[in-house]
Image (cartoon, rainbow over all chains, first blue to last red; front, side):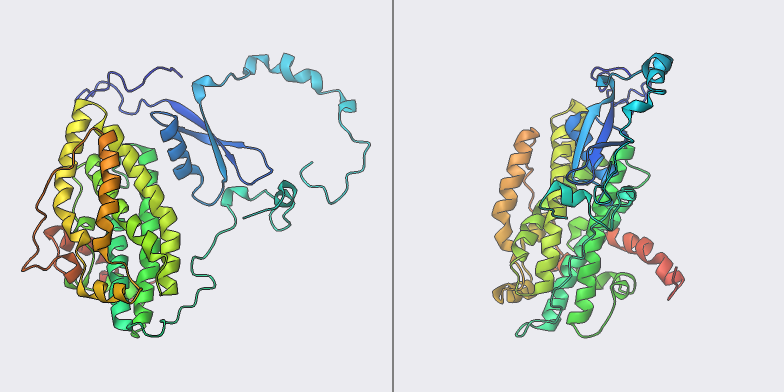
Length: 111
Length: 295
């Protein structure tokens, strides 16, 4: 994903450029108070304000959200699939990190 | 969906959170509202008024729906579709109300699909065609600014159904107006080309503005009874909002004498522009080809 002002150079009549060169935004929704924001998808927008509007129109049509975050996809630093083993494999055999020796009361959800 | 504590929100029994993508907590705007026609209110007048506001929403919604698969961006298409659906929802409630208020028991479908052009009471700005994206934005901004001012006052209507519909509508139209205003600012304050398109779109829409603020006799009567809003009162707020948006958009409001009606008759009297016949032909084609069909 390249950054910069994607609209530059996309002037009237210039058909050599693909018309949709708006940057990509990732959308995070919180479905209700107390829960955390969850990644729901991505969309294109010219800037953050428009991204928020688009997110509202695309991802909260069925009452899914009470709060929206949008983040430029290019601003996210992600782990790479190549680093999967050194990143995640070491935790695979450490069962003692799980609190499996406690009784969880029925009345406590979301654990 | 109000909760006193975060814990209450997440422990809500009927929603495990697994179905969150389908949404919860849908509300019926007419829940608990007394739907009887209030004493002292003329049912025929009330029905006529419901048709005016309902037809505005129905016809505007249909014109917006015609943007589907034609919008410049997928995201804008979803936005326009949402706005069209909001307006369709308002139209359904208002047309249904009309059938109850006039005692004929006609349904929303009867009104939408079985009336001829002269029986539609929408203002003409809702029916005209859009030349380009700037046109739909300018039209939507003018329409939403006017309708928001109207519905905001209608929340105090003596008719509880109109008040409830207005209460729901204000939240919807506030977003529509914001959407259109933001886009007009982008276009007006954008490139030379987008600015020129925005100027042309305003020029195309201004002839239909005077009509929005001209009360019919029905509206004047109902306004005196506290049921309706006299549209003449809305001009001040409308001009103020438009001035604010246009100054940010680096645009000017073009002066226009207003498109004359036929012998003084306009949309509210059932006199429409040429575009209206084509719109209705499309809107009603399935219902006319297959009367009584269900699916």
